[in-house]
Image (tube, rainbow, N blue to C red; front, top):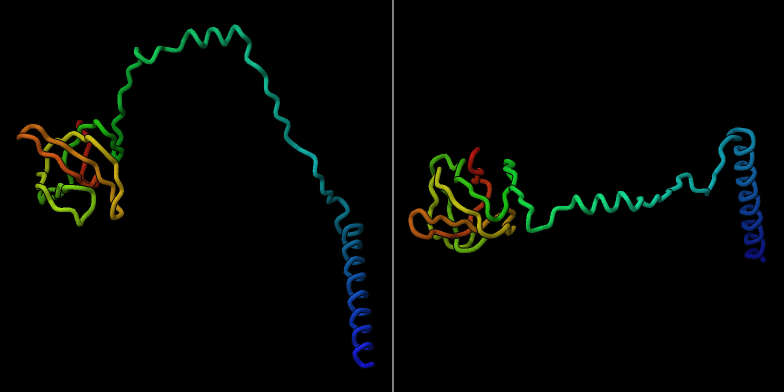
Length: 157
């Protein structure tokens, strides 16, 4: 019998509490914030307008065939690409370890000296938190290996 009384009291108190929360929300909506309206309608309308055929024809005639296009790789400090010529710089005369493969654990093939010029032939590869490029020098016989880009400078800079 005690269980039934406690259960009825809890249900009654919970119901009164729920109804009172609804009344408070209604009061706030009507008297405190009457101008707030929630809408689900779309506010943006996208209109796609087709291009006139005359403009399409003109644009098609202005396109240069791929065989006639010539592009030059811009020289941007810190940005390198395969085929780019670089100079070893920033080693403070200590030189740059050129390795057999990307990674600081890879065996050193030779030491590239400050000011030597190289051609980037492959990469980038990210290993050990560093960016590695395959570089090649042909001035003193073929010297090739992987080096960290932190000590590269684009030629002409």
